Picture (cartoon, rainbow, N blue to C red):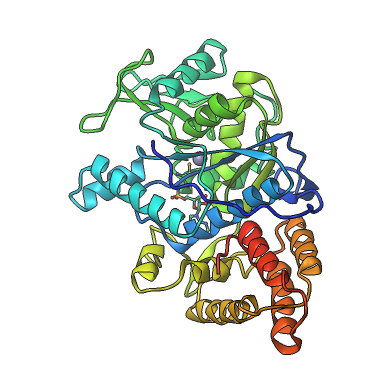
Length: 412
Ligand SMILES: Nc1ncnc2c1ncn2[C@@H]1O[C@H](COS(=O)(=O)NC(=O)[C@@H](N)CS)[C@@H](O)[C@H]1O
Ligand SMILES: [Zn+2]
């Protein structure tokens, strides 16, 4: 599937400290240690109701990771999927009398447009679940042969499930207890109560064809893939058996990333699948998580069509810490617009105080688990000094502009 437009990143002098990020599986902020090429898999959208500000906040957080790793001199092999076949998409298409394929294509196109407008650095590989079905089916077949998967004893629909006991590590990523796992499995598309499963949390790997549902031929029989195995296959086949970062929102901690990691590890024997599992907090509206099911959505495209500067949307969303559940409010946007106006005034000056300390602070705070509140405050301080007390460094405005672009993705 086609990815979106590339983004030019200004090269900056020097570099900052190693990037440290919170890892869900160890519940600690730890240094990332990618090789020359950092490998990052961030789960993509299920293409309907795109792109709401919750989606945007999550992709902006991992965009800061991408930008910081590049500032450190790493290349980044960034892979992202599109869940363009799944229950929720079929249900939405039904509700709207839409063709599910057309709905998916339309929403994915809008998502790409919004990501480009927000200047999110695009993934090198942008892969749809449908186009990945052959490789997903191949992975499932291997898990069956290895005994890490099994067919449920249901003559009508002998679906294939993953045996969660296969790796001996199941649960290490989320660290949730059994009761929590069962509850979240129920809430997020699992079927823990289905009779015949070895373990209630065993994830569906391949769903045999049901009347009226889309299905594809495979060695497993006609059907379609489960949700978690889609990400395991797409990541493994492009990034290898151990990646630097598996990212997504906190609602993906379980079952999605737990099961995806277990599927990958059962296949390869390499543990852990990801050296960091990093999750973003939920953007809310009026006290509720912004979500499709609640329909309380604010869309990037609506704000853009109303003339809102995408830089202000980005600045508003990164003004809070990426791991905090936090609300979207109109005042957040207004404050971001005022902040960018102050920055623009400083960048327009002939000369300003040296930007070197500000850039060092920017790097230091971003390297500290993406502490964007402090990072933005460092730019505020430099801009305020520039406007109030001027400065003599004629290079400073251009140097500051390049750093704000490369590290924060804000182009003024
Ligand atoms: N309100 C929200 N705040 C922050 N992130 C959110 C919010 N709602 C969804 N997300 C994140 O946006 C990304 C896409 O969500 S999604 O469209 O539901 N799609 C999926 O979760 C799957 N296609 C992942 S393979 C996920 O990482 C999800 O955690
Ligand atoms: Zn995923």
